[in-house]
Image (cartoon, rainbow, N blue to C red):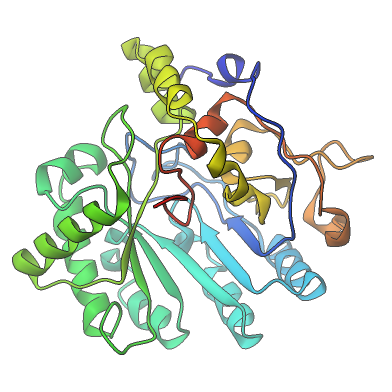
Length: 321
């Protein structure tokens, strides 16, 4: 796989600083039941990296001492970490909002048949990745059979109350382009998704979040192989909007990798650009003083243009209307 960091490190991206910490995003490992072309984590079934119980306890300890109110769980497929359910239970017992970045097909994996019920019982917010409402596009990006498994997963979640009017079980979908282009306007795409999924499968959900593909890891390597890396970077830079700098996710979030090390965001984590905290060049969660994070400079490189291009892009969807 082609390395992208050497192409990204020299940057003119504007300097930004962290605001008050609100969200702890934790990557529980790179093990996944899918192997998607766009994956910025390079996750897959053959990966073995998975957060251990000791680091899970460090996550919980930090949540308590920093009074974190939102825990955002990612992977790979975060549910395949053997301590996933323990972490969710402990966080929810202290009234921490938990988000599960779910790929939907995991809900029908052997051993995960009761996962949807577990998520509903603990009122976990589900952010489900679905790059399109058309079968050929989903299977083309994520693998044969993923679309049908995704629809089955959405129906299972709907049956439990997720995405239904009057329910407090939140189901949001996450869209990313299938190639080197920017996401279309989020509001219009959400309307299209809601119409098509309702008409085709009687599926409902709360909202759609759009996310730009990052020119790193598997997707970045594919761009290099096809000779599209420079043109994609030019697309991102030309579409940059300063307005997005105020609401990029890294200003209110820190990202923890499966080993417990701390980064400004999930994308920096995948490039191994750790949070800069003197005197530790590579801080670990167990050593982190949350009170020293406010106003700390955020490590930036050219991939950051992926978050500020056009309507903006974050784990919470578009930044601008």
